[in-house]
Image (cartoon, rainbow, N blue to C red; front, top):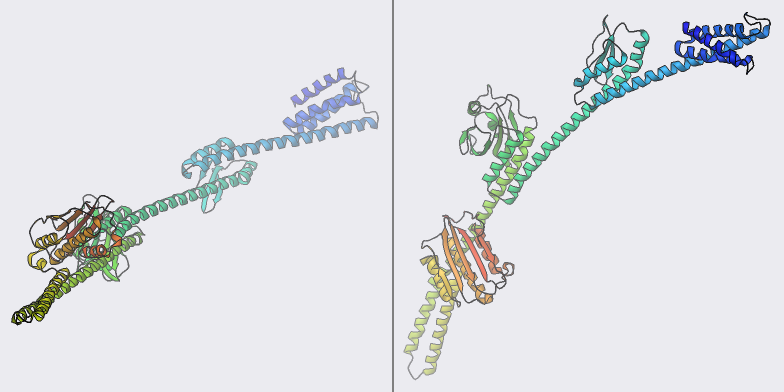
Length: 603
């Protein structure tokens, strides 16, 4: 009120100097800014009082008959009414503008608060960790004794008012003092609560998306690791390595991927026993490699009667010797998958854990992928072994047929030819001397028969050299060397008999090499070295000819390669142009010649 009176006095004093330069009716406008200022700062009520006071002061000090309130006619009343109406309208407009400004400032502060809360809440990895700071900001921004955001449904009481926050499946609460004025509570309910709900919903969605992305990344990482492990094992299978190496890789990869304490690959010897072929375990676990286990209890007993994967979540109280063994070794649970080869249960892959928690939910599926690779390795090995055995049987049968033909020729046809030759010579001696033509014809027939006998001997030696069966590989090679038109330097190595199929293969390898050298190599000397390295016969044949030999162009080398590989051996040919030709043959010397040579070629 005092400020209003002072404004009226200042405006009244200001009118005096202006009265000399303008009309008196216009001087009333000087009081309008004061009314506008009061309305803006202190509201419409005080502005209305100032408006009336301004009208009365103007009439008293500036309307003729100065010093008295003069309303002589209706014109004075109209001017007073117009002034009051203009002043009051101006006050109303100022009050409205003030309210809008205050509302704008309030909305700006709310927006600033919401923006700050959005940055705080949406950047947090854990929503619960930032709620205390968010509550502090609300308390400071609203000027409240306290403000609390809780992610649980909390009921209000006489000390605090509870505003529910609904954010999808989450139900939270905003707690503020209960004695707040109704306008403040309405503002909180209508404007602040929806903003908080939107922020909390967005934060929950962000957490859900983040968790989903993290889960996807984890699953993708697990899938990549699993596929990488499977690819490593599949590469071993494709390379045709020994099953023992594949089994060891399967056990190691399964242990690592499933985070198992031990993984064992077993083969069923019968319905009652299984032998451990490969294992991988963490340090401290006892080794069972090579041991035979009784199939009594545990997943092994389940798998032998079915093809589906099986699990034992706990060995506590499980009957059987395998369950007892697992408990003694400290294992609490296991998952197993059968290894099926051609529809039959060949073995099993078993992963074991010592922790209290059950095995992973997808352990059976992941373990089955490894058993499929193990089954493929077993099937490939069995097929390869059967193929090699079949090829070896064919080679042995062919050699036996050659030997039988050679024996039949030697004991039958050759003996008859010798007998006929003797009879012709005897007949030639009985012919009288005067029958020279008949005697000459008999002599010619005898010579032809002798030549035919020698040709038959050569054919017989080509079918199967008798000296190979009688004297062994060394004497047979020396005979070949003497008959070769190119000088041969022979190192026969150790003098001991080898399996017949090995000696025959080595003999034909040298014979074929000599034939090719004589026909194509233009060589001056042939070196032949024979050595036995452990259980492998190593035969090296080298000439100093023109080289450039192509094994694919000659049927002899192809058939020789088939013969050597059928016995589990290897044949390698090196023939650079101008550098001669080298043939390296490696043959296993086991009792039946059926083992395999896995050493890399040295030439």
